[in-house]
Amino acid sequence: MSNLIAPSILAADFANLQRDIEMVNNSEADWFHIDIMDGVFVPNISFGMPVLKAITKHAKKTIDVHLMIVNPDQYIQTFADLGANILTVHYEACTHLDRTIQAIKMAGMKAGVALNPHTPIAVLEDVIEELDVVCIMSVNPGFGGQSFIGNTYKKVAQLKHLIEFTESKCLIEIDGGVTNLNANTLIEAGANVLVAGSYVFGSENPTETISDLKNIIQ
Ligand code: DX5
Ligand code: ZN
Image (cartoon, rainbow, N blue to C red; front, side, top):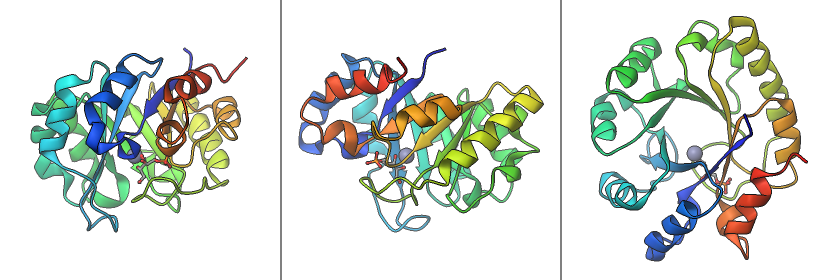
């Protein structure tokens, strides 16, 4: 399987959201990455349900929702109803992670877990076989446009090893600071999905930038 590209809508022009969504629809991108922040789990507030509803009305690709919120359990059904295909919660926000994963699946979505940069891969050993996606945060969550943390490469290799050892089918997603400078190394290390916000939407030709990321391995 070739690597998947998930442009992060956080970096889109919110005054021209439909235009940017159509750009992603017509590009080689695979997923829409949607960052939901509550100002509690992370020191920033992005957008909520009404905006997600507006996005899913136009988006024609997989909706990958990344919840950076406390108590994600209370909104699982809401995000399913809004059209999320993948729902990713933070390990650090879930006391009963196994229960949360089951609830996401019961609601008809694929289940993802995100790990902050300081959280080791080993905490997922006992749930890895239940997961569809593990999102390795390569920045501290809360803001777009931050610099990539180099320790991520080691974590990708460790996660790949765990996935192979357990024969899990889960995908490795990398989120934060992804550019042409690290994409190739990430894919070679085992990453399957690259999230890219400012690198895509801040570029002169976002469609071309998506294509470059998609075809990064020659
Ligand atoms: C950070 C978000 C990311 C962010 C990525 O908290 O989870 O998805 O939008 O943006 P860039 O690619 O600009 O680092
Ligand atoms: Zn994200």
